[in-house]
Length: 509
Ligand code: BES
Ligand code: MG
Ligand code: ZN
Image (tube, rainbow, N blue to C red):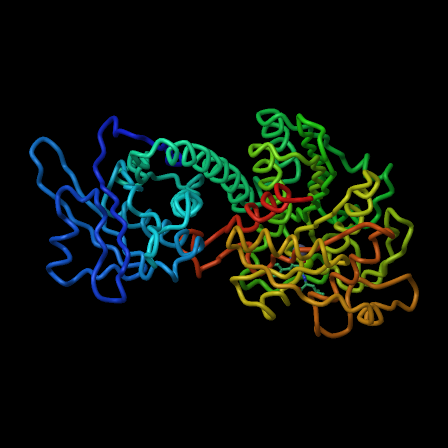
């Protein structure tokens, strides 16, 4: 079975290693700067040959015929040191993983000493967080989703290196790396949950399936988990949530997962809300058939919330987290809601549903109202809400909107640390005019498609109570098929923003 690779920091190398990972900087575009750990003079010899300059992203694999062992080296170009960033190192990590897999490597040893900045030099890594970013790239790049392949590949026992040793002779650095690598292992496990959930086909990935998975994960990670059935949702008067699921055979579920910190010092409550449409056919306003299969990913908001909650719990953050995941299916049937139907939300407002494909905002509205009963200090919802966000920002970036500038700024700051790109879009209240209904308090969609992402957020804003700080992440652009980065799978779920959200919670003041 495939497993995530293990990371450890060591002051001496124990056990067998078969791949030496040597990172080199480029000196003003001419020659590589040699690490002192290069006993075999591999890099020196490479450098003499003139073919390897240490450009960022360049990799040179060397295989040696060493008596009684099969050793190799991967020389990794880091480019000009002053231009290097954590995000670039993450990218290098993803590429290193791919290369090591194709070379059938089993264990990598990373030489860490001598990579750090020396006084006066323009090259060198800044601190152990740089090494962490490289390790993140490896573990994020290592993901696979092979659950439904009936035939294993020929050499099925090999999935890639199972172990990485970060070698340093500096005890203080080792202790730092121990910490960082533990954080990275938690990232690997949490992002894996988000990706697995998102990739699950909707005939297996039903609301009840995710409820069961969440229960298990909660138990393993010391979290509380409560599951609301549709009956419970009726009692809660969640008319919008129930309306969306009305046409489906499979029942919806609302998951409430709670993390409470051990220490009560300076604790605040952060609420996360995720859209969990296990399949979005569009309902009676049915979608065209081309790429409709991608709509199994329409629960990625909920999957991201689960992953972020797990990661924050594994990191033992000091804030309390309430995570609501609203799972349901959007299906056409004789029982489905019809365009023009009027539904009543949990907060009493009425909505004319003129497009049953604008269903995400409906289930989020009720989930947002529900979570505000907890009196959270900040609310963030995450959803694959509009196709329009990809038109605005492309596939490498999600949209961020909200009612509180300080909250927005701290989310953007977390995104800078994680490297996951987020761009703020304006929340113009005037756009609510486009959602005026003739017969209800509002309609769920406008008559044209201008500013679709902003309009969806304006709709959500109608359900945010006075004084509540709220932000909305539209991840329809980035949830799957994020092809631009080496450490995200080219196809299927990206798992993006799990790290950003956990970082945000961790840094929240
Ligand atoms: N799930 C879709 C949004 C989506 C589109 C996610 C593409 C991922 C990729 C959402 O429910 C939807 O259908 N939105 C409509 C809203 C419109 C009818 C106002 C859209 O974006 O077209
Ligand atoms: Mg839809
Ligand atoms: Zn949807």
